[in-house]
Picture 1 (cartoon, rainbow, N blue to C red):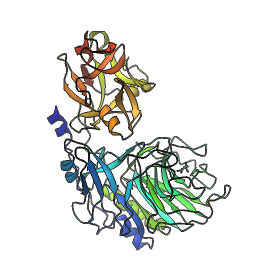
Picture 2: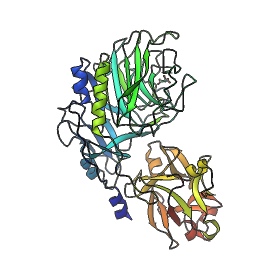
Picture 3: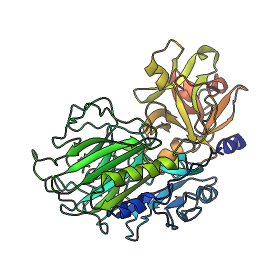
Picture 4: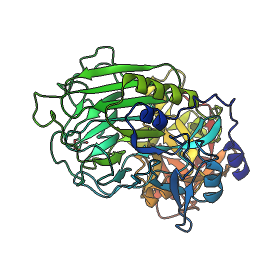
Length: 501
Ligand code: AHR
């Protein structure tokens, strides 16, 4: 099985795209609005950059490694990460600033609105860019990075611009998946003390149009789609493209604008361009404090999830022409999913449903319901929500990449994990405990049929259904669900084509 999983982790790569040569920060500089911070786990944002992109730390011995490029101005050396993290797990500990200002992002400590964060899993988001396999940063809640009092970032009404490449398939409605300018203390110090791109479905000033996710300006104490907060743009129903370019610019005095686009094709749509809020005090002029955040709100509100591939901040307000050129370069990178993985197998990235094999229950599948993992009868006639609840995405094991974890199909960032030996769907919180509780090692079905899944941290316990609830159970033991009767059948599952592809 291990070999199967390892083979499944090898991605075929499509034709190498032609990169538009000026990298984003070359373009911003040529436009007179140079980058003051540039962060990416996938590529160089200056054509001449040849340093480290990010640092990973592995669980087995806590050693760290800086991940650089395959060449100047090129793409991340993901092979170095794969070799270093083999048979253990790694988190990203630093995302280095590619400018000379050393505005490196490190894991964000506790703030007034949230506990200390974890680093993102280093291998959770494989992606192709420039025809190579690299990794994005996948935030599952309680994950964030910060640089306090960054060098050269706008303060007190100075003008600035920023962009990030994120994903329209991985978001939620919790505060706040942000990239941009935040407070020096990790606290809400008042209106106008932030100027960050937000991406998600938290409609702070309802009504919003459509179902999102939307690019908004997090200006502190509000996610703004206009000077009045509310969306005034009925065409802005959100952007669900797998790869989204999100932009914000703000002259610090009386103007801001938001834009988004498909990071794989086409141009940018301006969603708002106009006055800063004046109906609420504090935003015009702005009072930015010049720190940088990624993944949380300014006060470390850290319930949000999201994906980050690259982003930069500028001194001065970039022109529309500059932003269009940046978007053209992003498109030329050709962000894309690794080669599609067929559903219904345990290959990493595959979408599956898990069918019980016990004679009583061969039409029942593992699904979540009220956050509990249970089995339900599912069929082609089931309603879409039930099918979604009974579908899982196979991920590399959160605690060991030779095993697997199961991410919810309809609650991205939530995983199957056990707690007091019962299984639940819960948001991945980045802790070592969650990672081990959510990791399962497949082996041949104990009944001789299908596959059984041993708990990573309780290896004599296997995923089992018992009275239609799902546990990790041993073959005989103190709990009713450890009963030996029909144990072998109850822990044997058929990995099936997904109810929701
Ligand atoms: O402005 C929205 C959020 O409000 C900020 O990110 C946070 O600091 C505050 O809770």
